[in-house]
Image (cartoon, rainbow, N blue to C red):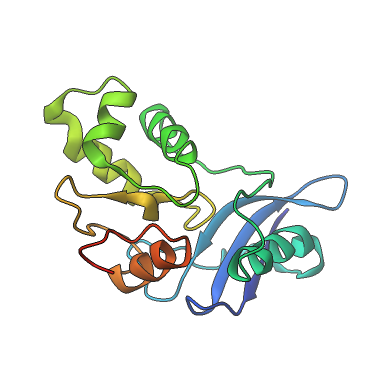
Length: 168
């Protein structure tokens, strides 16, 4: 069963969507923010249920309070095999650091010409914040291409102490 809830945060109201599991917990399929490019909408067949999101809500609160660096949640995003390879590389970016689109392309064995496809896959990330696509920046250190908006990307990098020096 698809379930959803919302959560107030420093980024605005987060929309969490997931698949309820037999044990009463949820595997997240989407986390989005208001106005997000390609952001999720509440599915028509979804049920509002904040109780099954207790652990994601707890971890998000701890992250925003500066008490959590790594999320440990069941995830069930849907993407192509290529997107899932890119998302796995994004998942490996440590808290408080950044990398470039080119470095992600190199990590997954995509040619230099494939950097645009890497950016598109990162932009399709359905788990904003949980999957730290905000940690991917341009080769010149500029903040680029964040579906939630560059102001939110800047906030998250500053929160993690990873805002490029020329921007901070």
